[in-house]
Image 1 (cartoon, one colour):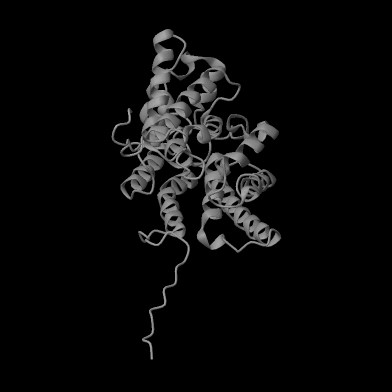
Image 2: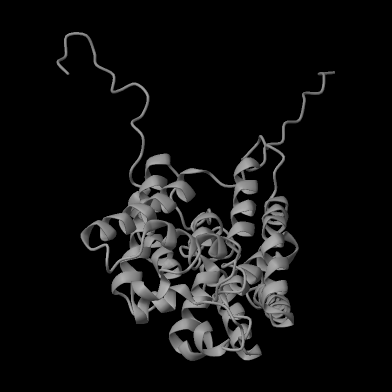
Length: 323
């Protein structure tokens, strides 16, 4: 009688895991966003809590319904829909009406994620797709300077766009850092967002190349414009702290599915997106160019991914042949 041979069962790769999961990654990202969410409620009141809760609920419900419609396995338990809903809420004003939040969250899931096949297949950052739809379709409801007049907070980017540099000379950078400005309810909490971004860097959930090059692109382009005309263009520190620059650098531009993989492509991606932020702020019709700049940079990701490192070694050369 022959001895029994061991039965080897081979499944699909990867065969070695580091222990990290999508759910764990989303959980830690949500934890990194928590300080900014808390400060947003203190700054903008119960309206901020309403927008965040509604956006997250609609995003989760939309993903569950679409998975059922497309006959896919349910994926709401991986927290990615909750993550998308919260990121969208951070870009919306606390005064956003319920229907605007609903449309934006549903569009983020359908048009930004599920229509391409789900998590990991999206060519654009999902919450930015929903935000762009709302910003272009209903600009009045998305304008914090027009809908939140009852708050005694400056709107530095709007003031710079419509009234020039003199209108923002008295704006204190420390005030901007602490979140004393109008804008998306979470993106303007600069200090809290920065702390959350550094936490993700330390946990190695995001790579340093894109945030660093993004901020460098913003600073270098703003500095170039200031050298051209110091009386017209704002300094780099103002552009770094105003609006959603820091939020975009750490939480939007680092979306793993829509950004390049290699180090050099990632650096170029960040520099390109950061430079476009200033170009849009200077020449565009919208005061803050962060979301549009990242969306435009996403379109270059397939091209940037073609920049690959040189393979180790080289072609085999037989004896007597010329290279």
